[in-house]
Image (tube, rainbow, N blue to C red; front, side, top):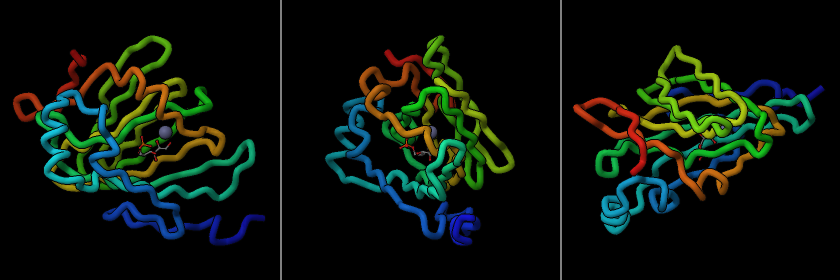
Length: 187
Ligand code: S6P
Ligand code: ZN
């Protein structure tokens, strides 16, 4: 039997913190090359390097059938017309799916099917659960005015592959158009 502190964890839906989780912070400069408007990015990066998001990963066990989970907190803001977002990744084990559970704030997920190239924008909000199928690049976007917090649950074997998607980038951007989040093909 696992240790009790690996069986039960406590999280804070407002801050997206899980007690005992290994926390990774990503700042604006860590997302160089992600945003569509390179000029707007460089102007913002010259002015500072704010925290964009933090993710706490909780890894109770690493066996074949085990699960890991993480809580994310993504700040509100924009680079030009493009909302603050996560780097985004594929799972190293491409078939691994993931479940996202919205806790607070207003977000969307950008999903890109690796096999068909199809992109989709899906709301990520409290009381909503987003199923990210395997073979799908995924990125989280804060389209609101408050921090966005969420939980992600994924196979322990999933692994994170940032390079594959960074090399060719997501095909679509989530931009504010007429005050609303809109998915637009990268030019
Ligand atoms: C892990 C899961 C999330 C992300 C988090 C940050 O599989 O999808 O916990 O790690 O949303 O995004 P990223 O792209 O920087 O890992
Ligand atoms: Zn993932």
